[in-house]
Amino acid sequence: MKLTVHPAASPLTGRVTPPGDKSVSHRAAIFGGLAEGTTHIEGFLEAEDTLATLAAMSSLGARVTRDGGRVRIDGGRLGAPSKPLDMGNSGTGMRLLTGALCGHPDLFGARVEVIGDASLSRRPMQRIIEPLGAMGARIESSDGHAPLVVEPRQLKPLDRELKVASAQVKSAILLAGLNAAGETRVVEPGVSRDHTERLLPAFGVAVDRAEGEARLRGPVRLKAARIKVPGDLSSAAFMIAAAALVPGSKISIGPVGVNPTRDGFLRILERMAPGAVERRATEDASAGAEPVAILDVTCPAQLVGSPIPAEWVPLAIDEFPLVMALAAAGQGETVISGAAELRVKESDRLAVMSRQLRRLGVDVEERPDGATVRGGRVSGGRVESEGDHRIAMSLAVLALVADGPVEIDGAEWIRTSYPAFAQDLESLGARLQWR
Ligand code: S3P
Image (cartoon, rainbow, N blue to C red; front, side, top):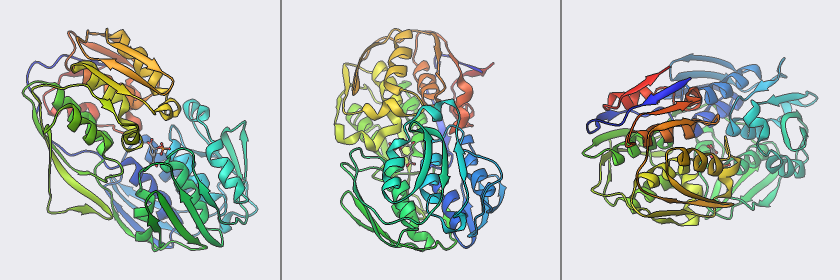
């Protein structure tokens, strides 16, 4: 499908409630399926990625009922699924679920196939197959890629230092550790999102934490919980960026999760436009273990490019297509480095974003581990999501300040994480058309 975005004719104003957090929704679905008893989830993200994870838990024997974002899961007893678990486009779903299943005693003797779409089947799975294999897991792959076939069996614990900060790899190991007798410990070279460590205790699992390190002791079974999913900062970021770009705009968005291991985009924006975003406390200061806030965004007088510290990369890992879009419309140079991980996301985001920005006349220099974007005039034109939801939304936001309309092909991928994206942007005053 094609989404046409027209240049904004007036400031964006209003208030948006962002969709539920994708990372927390995946975890709530998986943990709820593993946990004995009835788990209630509020604010679950109703998007393709997280619904795929919920469907997988149901195929594994959990009883799932859903009314919008309210989900009830009767979990605790798993059984071999009768068909492959299809994780769609979701790396988080595939990696976390594989970790949770590979040592699950209810599945000993079963062969569980875990598949994904073409993009997911190109993404590296060796990064989980290797450490889970070191725990004793048996996982067949197609040369380190999905489809995966998991033969659950008894695991032993692992003490592992990761080479790349990755919440998905860390979480896969910790979830496998739930079924291994003894302590499993993961140490990371940098800070990655800690939703697994925050949410497991709500399901009765003790997690010991220190700087860059998480430990738990297995075997342990999860107990049902009541979970409130925070608003997704990664989705809210598109609305924040839109308001930061369109002159005169003033919007509020929230409540939204502001977990400090996830708020890199806010830090980057604060560098590019000091004071543009203010955090306001809400009565409900947290959603379960996650801090939340309302964000008030005022379009800054100027948006100035900046070098981005490499240690912030994992804190804003999903927001770099958007950061590149902001940089394109700002002044001066934005330098991204230490970000080679962007090449193994839903698309090669450094290559795809560089290519698509150039189609709008933007000056971008791509490097193996980053890119330099020089801000200036952005022209209208035709671009392509290349199958990546965040590329489509980043280009849509940039289009608000282009010289003419921008047509985005492959915009249906937005449904992966933020089905109401266009609607929310329209509610602030933007003009978009689907075709
Ligand atoms: C996620 C972790 C990140 C992020 C992804 C969600 C998670 O991946 O890109 O969208 O929920 O754990 P990595 O930690 O593997 O970089």
